[in-house]
Length: 135
Image (cartoon, rainbow, N blue to C red; front, side, top):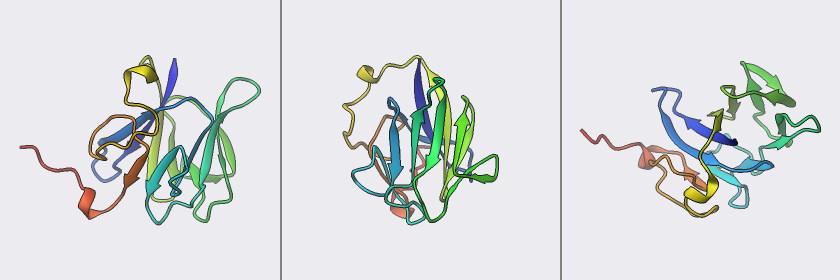
């Protein structure tokens, strides 16, 4: 099993993108972050998902300005379980288990269209990247 990090559009409740990455995974606005999200509410190095000594997935704040929230409570670090939703600045990520393998996905770090649900490295948040109506 691998961890999947899903970017959720809180207004519509739809999944916008996902990443299947082995922890540790750093999330931030910096292009050097494992998951780089171009949103001003995200710090350059906002948080890190890692495996603790007991084998559980945890998230920890890396000194961000806007913090991380789990169940609407600001936390410095927390143990996560599949289905948990983590608020990072104004961005919402859901953690899931998946049987999908990373090797079936585009190469790690390869930039893709932000409107697809493929593992990607950089996402810009803003009007120019709103999902297009395919109807």
